[in-house]
Amino acid sequence: MYMRFILAIVGVLFFPALASSQELAAPASSSRESRAKDMWRCLAVAQGQTTRQESYSILGIFDDLKKYVLKNRNTGGFIYTTMLSRRSSPVATEEGYPVRRESFIGTSSSDDLSDRYVMCLLSSGYQWKDSAKSYFEEVRDLANQGVASAQSELAMLYLSVGSGAGRVDHNEFANLTRKAAEQGYPVAQFNLSYAYAQGDGVEKNEEEALHWMVMAAKGGYERAIPILQRQEQIMEQLKSRRQDTATLESDLTAAQSGNAKAQCELAMRYEDGRGVDRNMSRAIEWYRKSAEGGYREAQGYLGVIYDKGRGTKQDDAEAIRWYRKAGEQGLGQAQYNLGIFHLYGRGLEANKEEARKWFERARDSGYANAELVLRERF
Image 1 (cartoon, rainbow, N blue to C red):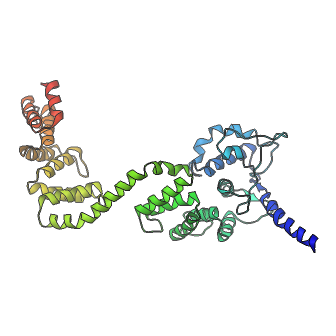
Image 2: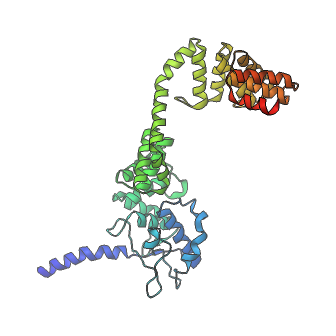
Image 3: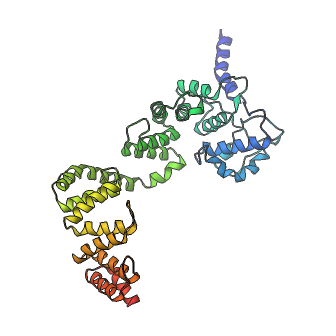
């Protein structure tokens, strides 16, 4: 009885180790060089430095890895602890092989880095020896067991037609990604952030997008860290947008009632995308209503729009018309721009004296650049 108990304990400790030693075999046609390339590429993916699609651009140092793939070992199971921890090169044993960190996804020997590494190799055509399962089947089975890395990877497979999932399903993507993210898996948190930012499978929500991006950054996912560094700034921007949305209705009501200032404010909203979807056609429509109502700022903005061809065909004559209306009402920037048109003969005959007149008016209106032009050109 005592011996049976000991054997049971040994079995619990030993069999997970057997599972974790299972070899991940490369495609039979692969070369030593291609295996080295796969390993380096997937190490980069595991570290969050790049996605699988982007990773081919960082292979300049894979030659340093290639010499460690010795004696044509047909395996992808070498997981270099030193490289996963971002040290310069693998450490070799006395026999010349690199230190090997065994991992089988979902076992006690796995971790986020090695799981991502193995997932990447599986998706690249590697297979566990003695297994006939497809990559999709491997990942699906692990995801059903609650393995976060597999849930995250399976979610991504639902975004690709040829992945084995059989369909593109944004809702399934969001559902699986959330399960992994809620387990603290940084890659899934990063992906869930993008889902909320784009509205993929979930309702678009910028606050939720920021929350999950920050969580990914705190979990060490490198591509998310710049967002963490700008967290306070982004939160202020979101707060400002919420305020913009809250005042939209009152601005719209005032604009529709003919208030020229409110019409200009509404136009700027459409131009900048504040509280509404960005729409230059609507912006121009409201700028024109405000400008025709005599609001000089709207007249000046219309001048710039036609001057630069923003959202409409560039038109010097229209730009001059609106700059002149705003300039006659004392708008310094419009006066300065009219001076430029007269100085260089844009849309009208060049006239240095007329240009001087408008630059002087712009200076007197407090437009600083006008003084500089007057000193340098007159």
